[in-house]
Length: 364
Image (tube, rainbow, N blue to C red; front, side):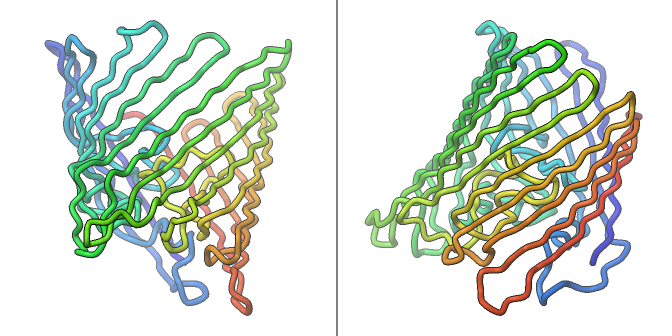
């Protein structure tokens, strides 16, 4: 069991001559750590079990092509993001160009992301190659990101493409070149008078060719993610959500155990507050979610159940039942999550965890 506290502070200057600066830092530290469960760090322990400092330092510059953001920054995209259910967000060293005027109702994004730091990075305090998070032994010239996001009236859609080129084999055994991660989603809102139904679907694919030290392509690696979601909202403040997600590995994929895709984005619809695809140690699985929430003024409460089911021959975890209870009031929010995990190996004790988080958020 571990208990940590964290603080996140960001300051933005006024914009002058088409430029402004953002500076911030996040600090996390343990106040209590009394061991691990079942001989290994639990998912709850791992999320708060290290002391570290993260920072933001960037410039936003208005250009004829859009707004250019240069430096250490938070990137919020489906497959690369802050992992903001954690105490301290992931940050990235990047150059990001955002254009909202070239095409009507469309936001265009182009970015070169060289490194990341934070919980989803192999080194919390040190900015590390983006390829390390994908479980490879390669270094590269960063991730090239291209995206288009559309939104008008009831229809929304987006497409993101992340690509890594010119990888260098640091293990002198195999390398992955190129690595491609593509994501697409679409949503539609139906107003039914007194209630609204939101429908959404998503598809993502990670693909790469593994090349041996002799330079011979010997395996096509990758995963496919599918997802669907329905969200019914009533004017009285009640919301009911149902979601489904599945992960399927390519036949030649040899990544051991945990599915890995992306860099702290975790876009899947069927996920818990503190448990998602990378938490479930299996290369192939499905997840189903059912949740409900109620809001009245500044008060919001909710509950959700997420059920994971995996192939016990393709990972250490066979199944998981996750229960989330949430509440928020003005600047305060609270999350309580129970994780009931069934291991694949016969005779292995279940890995049960309880996670509690309290947040206080207020602009300075």
